[in-house]
Amino acid sequence: MHISCPHCTTYYAIDLATLGEAGRPVRCSRCKEVWVARPEDATEMVPLIPAMAAASREAGEPNAAAEWDALAREDDIETEQTPVVDSPSISGDWPLEDAESDWPSLAAPEDDDAEFNIPHRGSWFGKLVRASALPRAPRIPFLNLTVACAAMSALVLALMIWRTDVVRLLPQTAGFYKLVGLEVNLRGLLFKDVKITSESVEGKALLIIEGVVVGEGRV
Image 1 (cartoon, helix red, strand yellow):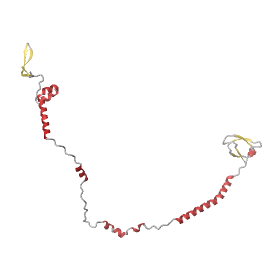
Image 2 (cartoon, one colour; image 1 turned 90 degrees about the vertical axis):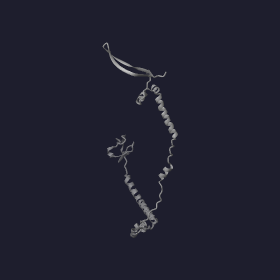
Image 3 (cartoon, one colour; image 1 turned 90 degrees about the horizontal axis):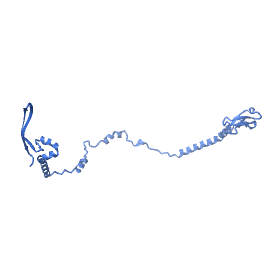
Image 4 (tube, one colour; image 1 turned 135 degrees about the horizontal axis):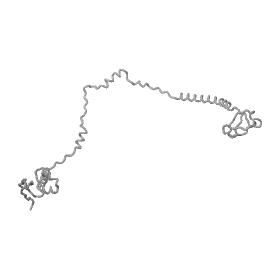
């Protein structure tokens, strides 16, 4: 016999003798609820699963056989409707071995000494270079060169004549003038006939410098 839990409807197989006449409290192992199980609440479970399986087998066997027969008939119909085309051999038009042996002779030129007359064409790069040739630089007139030389000469002459003024403005140029052999006297004094002698006067050595001082400045 079987009893069912009133809370979760879980069935349990039991022996009615264990319940007694008045019943006894039992606990569901699934939902953990407790209720009083009585003998009159027990029911007998009919094995429905084997019966259902047998019924499905009885009903399914003819249906499955009918389905297989229908599929077989459809395959036969498709096979009968499929057109059959006689395809020619792919190698039917291929040359035989004799023709294959003649291929080198067919590929060879008729005249072995024939020359290919290829027209000579000029290089496109050369034409492009000639077409886009750079313009010639303008010639420098002779007059301009003469004027430049005259200007340089005038500048050098001015540096020589007014060297005193140049050194006064730019003292570092004095070394350049001395290098080329030109002395620059900014004070306008010139010492001539300079003599240096030494004498002893009252036991002391004296240095005596004698000379002529000439003024070269402008009056």
